[in-house]
Length: 186
Image (tube, rainbow, N blue to C red; front, top):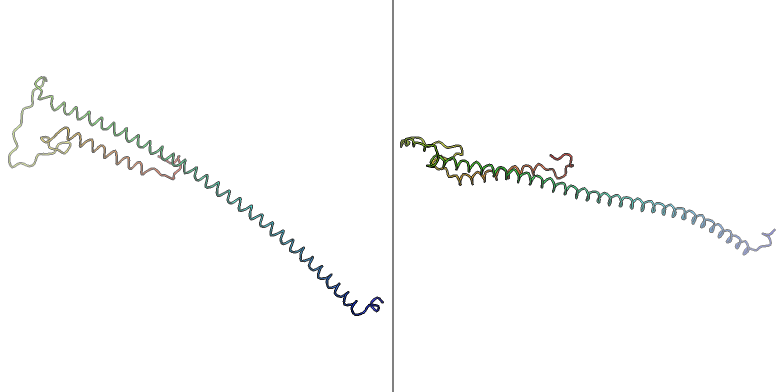
């Protein structure tokens, strides 16, 4: 009955109102759906930000630990190298002192027989070598005894000791592993 009392404009108005109500309901449902998706996206964004912050903190901590390890390793290397340097220097000084003592003893022993105040007699000179003989044999230091100059021999010995100690120092320094743990060092 109500429909009979309404004209076509009233029916059209009700249809438009019903259509608007359906559209409003659909719009509300869409808004709720978008709100849920937005909340999920916000939640994912927050999780990503938290993961990024954690990763960044982990990388910074690892970098700080690596810097600390490098500093400790550098300090360990300085200590090992200083010990090698000191050990080499000590060995060098001991060997030089020993060589100088022996050279002084040789010099004293060489002068002693010819010294008229000594109780020993001067050695009797031997026969000269014949003109066609082989070259004179080398002494212990590979120099002919007649050409032996004690100061030159001492300088040569000191230089040989210095070179030998330098070679040993280089080998020891080369044997040090810069990235090895302290317990694995020789």
